[in-house]
Length: 473
Image 1 (cartoon, rainbow, N blue to C red):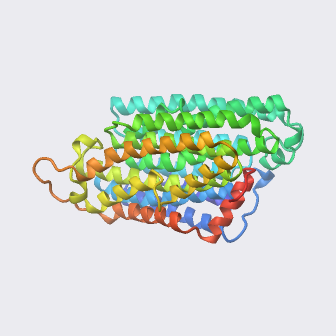
Image 2 (image 1 turned 45 degrees about the vertical axis):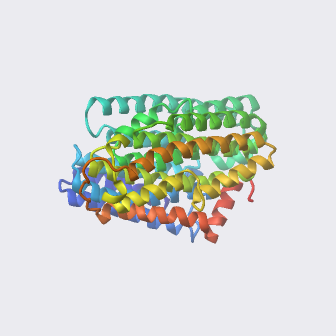
Image 3 (image 1 turned 90 degrees about the horizontal axis):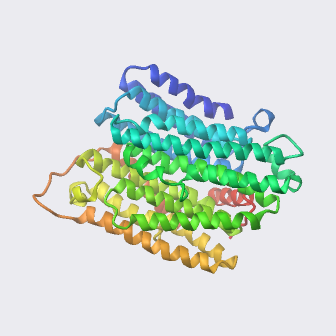
């Protein structure tokens, strides 16, 4: 069952590459996404078997990220069918094949109970998405993919070094198997363990886009197709967070909570500061969302640093951030498709000319900035409450101030695009169900997550928080 989750998208990725007709490639994409989501959903009702040697498995935190990635990929796959029917990227076979390859690699990350296998999965996600960033084959996309590959490679190399150091710190159990690391955390060599955490924080922090390691994000998200940027912001960063969360759980179990808190809080607040500051006056919506991603990765780092109830907030924030980012990136992708640009100075009357996408864009603004009653408000409120409980009132106050700046920066750009009326009125566009259906669904989901959490999801979030060494509010 576990291997099937990886093999289904991997095999369909190969099939899609050799299929010539676009329609059959779309079938491969939808089939892979649908089967993957169905198998993932089955783990919510029946425990999954362990893989050989304990290298693969489904624990609550991994299932949470796996479910998020699988659901978001399904939405992106449906959108991609409509997108590829309108726009024909160069190398259409490679486009679909790389999308499915990313799903297979991300699945390896979420199922990995061995930290070296997790590293391999993270590196594969980088290689799978790189050709998609270069889809336009021009100077700007080449520069973006080069920066993405170089900085990601540096980060992943440091994560590999941290993985080696962590293996050296282990004296009992199977090397780098998460269950044995947690079970024998007290016997890990403290000095080597701390060194491993520093390398892994920088490595996986680069993949998350934590400041000052974030510089690849604006260019990459700005040049990549909107659906690819959506996968990166909603799926890739969630997988990178999982890598950092695994190491944080080991450090917490080893009694190193006081050591990991300062760097996590420092990088988290720095990311929020950089993201908030660079949103002000931003005229490109895709780059605006890239800086929003930097900000939200900072919130996740802060939640890990706070611990306690903050771990529960971090688990919930992964879902909410992924949903909000994908709905906004797909909406902006529609604007680029219909109006030819993501720059606020060239977009006007969006609400009148594309009422569904315009409405989703406005609702997405409130969802991604953590406004009630959307889901991000609940997760951010939990993290702020955890900070106060841990006597980190100054962290809560700093977060509130930066969240206010974020709202001003995003609202200024998005509301101008929605309501600006300049020049002659343009024609109303035809909003295909393939292109807007997923964004409407995710908007409703973001609202539902703010109003009501189903009991199975609450239980999974509580279990994920305990995996991180935290507690439940």
